[in-house]
Length: 274
Image (cartoon, rainbow, N blue to C red; front, side, top):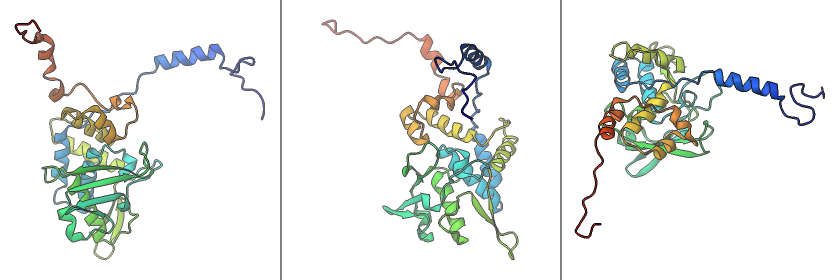
C-alpha cells in the first residue's frame, strides 16, 4: 500500500537492530539440518534381489534405485514427485554401441545389449548446466549397473510404444491383458522399498529416497575418487558437497588411526647431506 516497512529503521533503511539481534539468536539456537544417512550397499543389493523376476513395478523400482545411486540424482529428476519437476525422458538419454551414438528414443532394440556407455543430458534439472551431459559405463555387476538398468527402462518403454517424451519413471502394468495401464514410480514407493529391503539385512533403518544421492557420493569417496570429480558428477557448484559426505565409514576411516600414531618417515640423507 506504499507504507514504510515497520521493521526497518527510517533513516538507514536497515532492519531494526533489536529485531536483527533477535533473529540472530533464533538462528544460533536452531539445530543444524541433520545429514541423511547413506544407505549401505548391502541394502541396495537386497532391494535388487527382492525385485528380481517380479512384475514390472518392482523391476522399475530396482532400476531407478541404481540409476539414482550412480548418477547422484535428486528424486524429482528421475521419479514422480509432488514438487516441481523436470524428470529425464527418453530424449535425454544417449547410448554408445559399436563406437556410435544412438538416442534412446530411436536406437534399434537389437542393439541395446551391445550398449557399453550412456549419457544423461541435463536440460532443466536443478543445478545442471543446460545441455550438460553426465556419462557412465558398465559395471561388473549384472544387476547393479547404470547401463543395464537404463537399458531395462528404455527397452520396457519402447516395447510398449511409449513416445520420446515419456519420463523414465513410467512403466506399463500388463497384469490385465485387456487393459495395459501406464503408471509411475514415485519417491514414496522407492522409500518404502528401501526400508523393506533394509529389514532383511543387518542395517535396518528409516532410509529415504533422498539418501541415494548421499550414498552414491559416499561410494565414490570411499573408492578414492577426487572431490572435484564427485562434484562434477553430482553437479555441486560449492562446498555443499560436504553435507552429503560422512566420516563414519569404516572403509574410509579405518587406516587413519594408525597413520596418526605412527612416526613420519624421513628420507635418507646421502653423503652430501641432502
